[in-house]
Image (cartoon, rainbow, N blue to C red; front, side, top):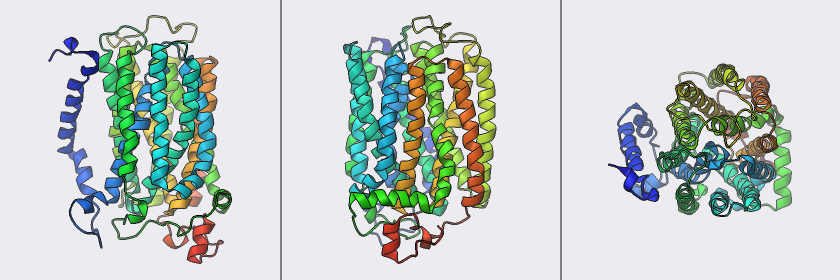
Length: 502
């Protein structure tokens, strides 16, 4: 089918059909077996039929993944283009710096907000910001002087993202049993990253014949429609209080709704009662730092728009394939959980050094001055392209491993819904603070080499602090009877002394 004669908004249809047929083939492959193996049985006291399937934790995690597919996934696709698909990266970098600055504050308090409003409502409110942000880039495409609106949309998204990611982390870690957490995180990561793949495919299809350095309006319109669809999905999800895990246990949910003062106090006490979480802060800080170099200072700096779009597609495909593998590895019940934690750390350590040693040889070849935004950029047909594309795929694999491992470590610390809300809120807050700093550094044109080296050093420091924490804190089985230690409200309800160790 010759897509060149179709309107730009319809040219993506053959590519989406191709992706659908690929998904069907995958479902019949060993990867498809993952979904069949994870059916939550026995279902205990629930009725049969479609309602049974809909009330399964796995089904709810899939819906959760679809929310993030349509929101953060498309945001990733947009950001992964470099400069959010624009020629000059300054506006998108300033918008991201503002986004992550407000995200830092929002995420820190979103744990108590999630506990008060409930994860479902919190997820709905959080998803709205992504639609506003994508709309802002369509507006600046139509009105080039609308920079201030884009930056304001970044501030709004930062508030919403803090809510969404805290609700997401809370639900994703609360639904599975002890032995399912790695796989559930992997499944979520696959669906979530499909947003990046679809977004990248749309961008690649609509800009394939373009030699410009920015995307067309049709790309933003398609992203906007998809993101609005994602806002509606949380309304279809089931109240977590009605969900039973596959082993028959219920989610640990408090029976009272305290005031804001009590919730803020609980946040502080959660950290006080489980202080080893603080040793993960350097790892949290580094977890979004590396995206600035990858997206803006490598992909955005070196390649033209169609090649940036192809790189984006390669990036998110690599994350999907690797997400399943690392989730499967972290949940191998034939290996003790403590041993799996050290194996995961070791894989991260090896991949980190391989990625940055390789990246250094490319980074030293260019600067901001040698390739200004208006310069002719590298194309996918150039002979030197393949090696850089492979490095970008390795960056994607490193990013997926880092994020999934962080979530998995947090998941080993508790099964309590409210304690997990506090932990994930803290994680997203520190992560966003780091991102705000590095995106602002990129906006004021800090040399590429400096951003690259800071990424390398911070990643090494993060792993160095995580290793003793894993040794002291990760155990083979989380004690359900002490899971409420970090949440005094739950502890009081269950009559558990606050001095017990989780």
